[in-house]
Length: 395
Ligand code: LMR
Image (cartoon, rainbow, N blue to C red; front, side, top):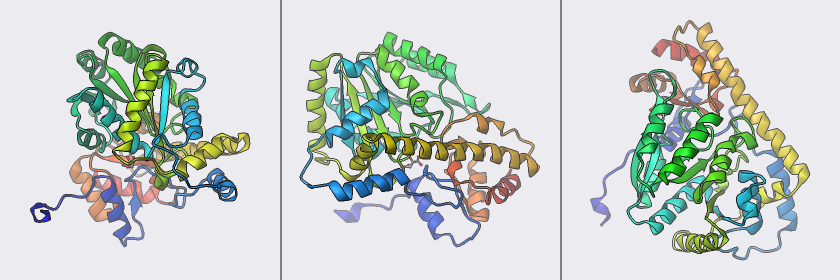
């Protein structure tokens, strides 16, 4: 059976990390995977996480199964983190489960949608995270795309997006990035969110909001503005969130899938279906990451500490946006890259072509996703000069 298999290419994002590790060039720079790094290129364990882990070590009394929904306390804390003090919580219309990372949340959401409507279609932005299409395809959904980014002018193609969403058939799902759009860094303004919410109501599509970077854009509440607005207005919606980036818990695999129903009775039915989807897939989520997050969010002191550490990560990345643009100019690049400073989160598109991306890798050991997406978190004051000189050479 296995002899029929053929070798597949490496994952476009994860494959870069493998290549980067194997590269012996001391000047190498990793701008591939969306993972926070400090000025020394290190991905630290947050101090609040260390403190929570110590607390768990001292206090955890059992490793018994938690069930397919995972930890009830984590689910409650995550719902509040995502939605704030929202009416859908007070009306008991939302159910949240812990999932193995944000990807696990997306896959579970995909399986859930397929269970509701076999053969359903989900619309994703063009461009979107390189794994979105694969995850939803694997869950059995058909994929369509809507315009999002204007590559010519390095800005949002909002009119294209709006017009496409008006044509989405009722009952299809539409995936929207809550904040820090991956890969473009271009987010919707408040006014634009309102227009998308209006279209969702008119058309009757199911909004599926992916929030993998809450806290990396403006702040925790502002980054959730759009999804909260959507939740104000629609009867049904899905939110997939991740604790990988904002809690730095990448390898612990912890995220959440939250589903809003039209009332509490339908939310209970949704929950029962959601749990059955999980049971036949991975049965139950891992617990350690959830335990860390719920410990932090249950402690005022650790929450304050987390807010500070999150701000530090966000500020460092934004500082690197400025520095990158300044250094490109200083190294004689005449092309206007100032749009990078207006974008949010970990990513931007450089807007260079595939051959130039490949040259950066082959000649300068600078690793960038093929679409020319850069992870700003890989830039530091120490490497920005080498980086911008190299970009100047390939331009
Ligand atoms: C990314 O987009 O780089 C991250 O979300 C990591 C991943 O899993 O692709």
